[in-house]
Image 1: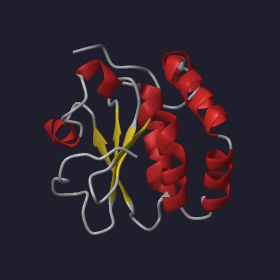
Image 2: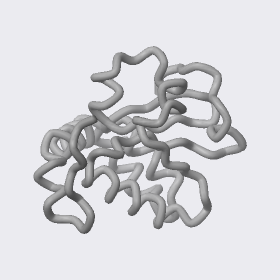
Image 3: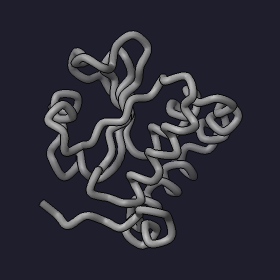
Length: 136
């Protein structure tokens, strides 16, 4: 995780913020699955298009922000792309074993995340509500 700015409201009191592309159908679908899995309410989704997201990712250029999802911890540290997989899984019920695998094989996790990110439009065709919205 990289240090970020002091977290705005919402990334405090143990809640992590998952930033995602709301214009990506596959991304919306994936975040929906995370929210359903997160029975403890430890993850709060926030669209990258929301002005609030810019405060958490203030040091990143727009194209880098939109290239992947980002997990912001309560201290304001940011993990992006494949590097966010293990910390996210550790927050979810019974996710620790999968997080251990992601930590043990970081190159594989990064490669798998990168493949999904590059093919998210195609993958969106296979999930309910997965079509992409037109670019703004």
